[in-house]
Length: 184
Image 1: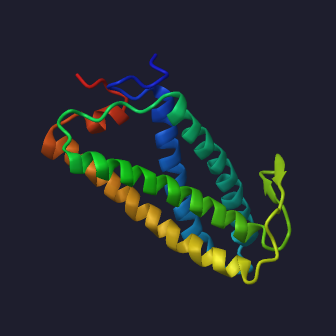
Image 2: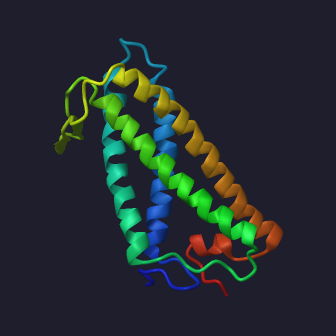
Image 3: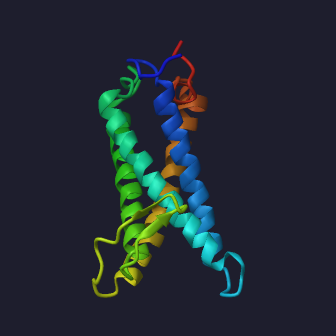
């Protein structure tokens, strides 16, 4: 089993982290859209945000692990067939995804702790409220959170479309590498 990345292939840990984050992001996006439609007397009115916050804290931890893993096990080298534009846009797109994801998670934290209360993560542990008392903290962070959530969806769709373009139009192994297949 290939745990670490090689020069031409992603290892299983990178693949697991990639798809786990993708699944969590889309799940959180759907949960977020659904929970803002709930009425006060709906059974899920209080439970859905608690689940959303708990998953958000866990996702933050996974993202930190993912960043550390990129240093421990650098991604495969770009394919020789990639032009300068493709190489630069790939780096910028990945950087944008990381920045937007961390910004969403931080803005979610600022929304959740604006009242000075910690975030309970499924009752396992609490994340303390350390940044509170800013004027309109929950509202400002909420607006930022909403726009960034849409931005990460748009960026990730473009990311997926680029992978599909590489696979079907260019006929290269870009997509196969993230699916755990060898570049041969």
